[in-house]
Image (cartoon, rainbow, N blue to C red):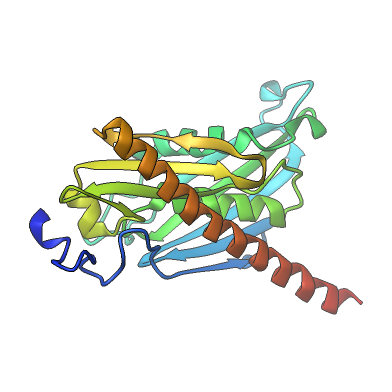
Length: 242
């Protein structure tokens, strides 16, 4: 699809959204029985599960830290998550995004509460349609909260891109493939902290400021949805245990 066709004459995008509008999304917490914490998220056609195991004894023991827990994160795309079958092993990009997500989460977790232990986070993309790193970060944060891991705040993320000369929020696959710039952002809104910020391509100073404003607006919407998903989860848990 040509870049010129990604923005219509009336300013809307090919999927009918306004420039600052998120894709339809859904969040659910506590979806995997065998994990200590879990979450599921859909952002448009992107679908991701996140699972947390721990805190537990660090293995192998020599990696244990005396004053804090070790956080391990694995971001992985299933072989069937993309149109052309992906090789089952971990790619360089997956290793990179595992590190990006881990560092973003470490900035809000109170790992010092669990010395000589480890916490494992698994982010599994089962269907990819752009925005997987930010959606994965959002899901991982929910799964950690579901596991009861103390943190300064929930984390949510979204990307802003420049398409056909226009800034747009929450890129679709078509927009992502043809964009001139891509700015994934992760934030902990209540403490006003940016935990993830990457830029592929070029933006002017003014465009960057506007992109950050758009990202913050979208993240605030996702943040409220995260809280509602957790409230629903714990309300249901209370009904079962009362």
